[in-house]
Length: 448
Image 1 (cartoon, rainbow, N blue to C red):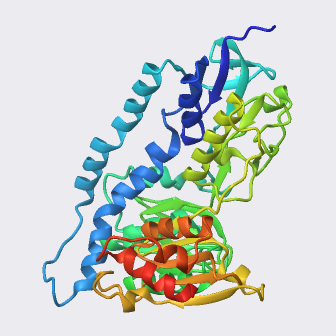
Image 2: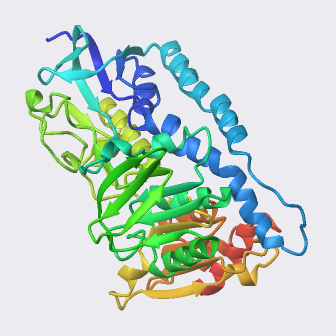
Image 3: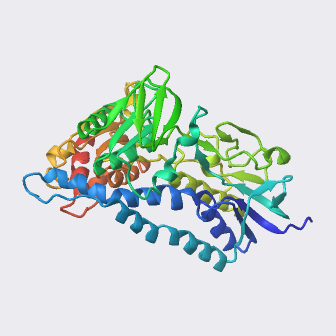
């Protein structure tokens, strides 16, 4: 029997890796993590966590705006102080997780890992072997291949800015642009969005996207649709962006938010016979690559489901269960909630309105809970959701517009995945008065 240095080795240390690593080391396996950047990966250090921290005060401003005539104070956000707060809170998370991993007996190798074959990994000048390998290297920001691309910044740079520019431009019409623009406009900056499409945020409810873009426009955000960025030049301390149509824009900062790219280059995947495309690593129903001892997890996967932190965690936990034999069935995803952390937020779970409109067996209803639950939802009168109901009067999907969409979609995720009926909801008692209990009562009525 072949003896390996490790039972399981992870290339990458984010949520797609460490949940499985912790489970496997507790199952008495010898486990290693290879990380060339920062322990705990993008979400913890450069993505979800710092983003929601920085957005916190602006969410308060958003809610204050619903009480005009009642609250009179003029509140502003001090960006440098907010950045100082971020520096105190976020960096210790990585070190805390590293200490937890090492205390559990996981070996940490801080360097770039390259597969030499299906069981051998080169890490710097070292080489070691592993029975099983999990690739969880995530993604990195895309960079436009245009003259002057060196003058652009990315999402990681945005969340490290010591001060907010007076004039900031975002290239791209997706998640990152919409979320950061919601923040930047509330600092008083002049905000421009350049997108090659004729619409923003594909994949979300079109009505809600229209409501969001209209609100951002009312706050001062400038949208430039059907524009492709051709080149960027530097002029003193400012930058000039020119599009293919000839439009020019002078700005202090340009954020390239044109998407994210799977981290597959330089991993030696060819040496191990691991197949991949530009969309990521290809796997079977058990998250195994073409080499059955090598798995892949998280955003590096070539998959159609949303590349989200909770999805990566779900996959990581599944891999641990599969390796230990606790789950021998193929991976089956539940309905996955997806939240856009703009101000206000957009969220979706299960069947979408667009899908329901193509299926006569499904019914779409609009629930204007912001108007009907006025004080519970803090005067956010335009908060609403579209719900999708099947022929058995079960909730199969929902799309939400409102500040509390992230919390509300979690309640609806339970309802969708458990296929609850109005009778099921009536058999439970919920805390009152609370915003979610009001929505649940409304949902019961709609499901009857």
